[in-house]
Structures are given as C-alpha cells and as structure tokens.
Image 1: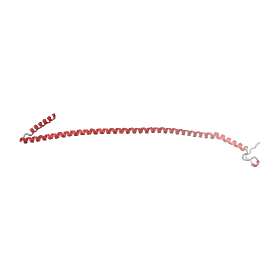
Image 2: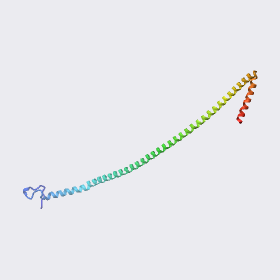
Image 3: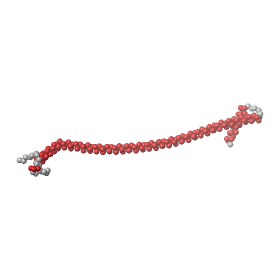
Image 4: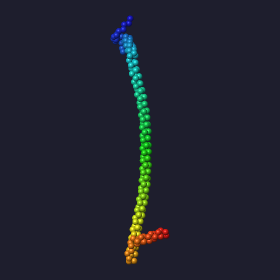
Length: 182
C-alpha cells in the first residue's frame, strides 16, 4: 500500500526539486479543484451568467433607446425646421401684404387729395363767380347811381329816384341781352 503523506519530501530523501511529481499533492489539488468547480458551476456560474446577460440586455436596450431618441430628435429637428420655414414664408407673405396695403392706401390718399383739390378749385371758382357777380351788381348799382346823378345834373331837375332807377336798370338789362345775342 501506498501511503500518501502530506508532507513534502526532503531533498535528502531523493528525487526532490521543483519539478518532481508529488502524487499526494496532485490528488488533493484535483479533488479540491473538482469540488470547487462543481460548487461554482451549481451556484456561482448561473448568477454570474445571469448578471452578464442582464448587463448585455441593458446595454442593448440602452443602444435601442439611444437609436430611438436619435430618430425622435431627427424627426423633431425636421418638424421644427419645417415650422420655421413655414413661419418665415408666412412672415414674407405678411410683409408683402402689408406693402400692398400701404401702396393701396398711398394711392387712395393721393386720389382723395386730388379729389379734395378739385373740390377746392370748384369752390374757389364758384366763390370767384359769386364775388364777380356781386362786384358786377355793385358796379351796376353805382353806374345806375352815377347815371341818375349825371342825368339829374343835365336835366337839372330832381326826378323820382325809384322811377329813374327802374328805367336805367331796364335799359342796362336790355344792353346786356343784346350783347349776349351778338
């Protein structure tokens, strides 16, 4: 029978050295390794593998989430760009509309001013005509008065003033109608 000893052989006993094969140490090392392997396989490896799988799954989910976030950000960017472009187009349209309205208002004001100018000219012409007619009537009255005064000096008699006035006015009116006919 072979007795396995737990102690290491001494160099004096023979065989020694670092590379010498010691069966008893090898046996116990294999037993401990096998037992440790079985314990680790039964209890530790499933937990370690589960942790690794969970970590891989979390990383894959994070990558998918990042891709989804990137896609959402790209969509939002495109949406905002479209909205900005729409707002820019609307602002350009509003500016163009405002310019058109301002031009129309300018044209309306010019037309209104021109119309008011024409009205003022017409009123001025009417006023001038009225004043001219008043001046002519005043001149006629004075001419009648001068004619009556001259006639009364010539005749040297003071005739009835109303009667003479009517006589001279009828004479002057016949003169104005004869001038208009010719």
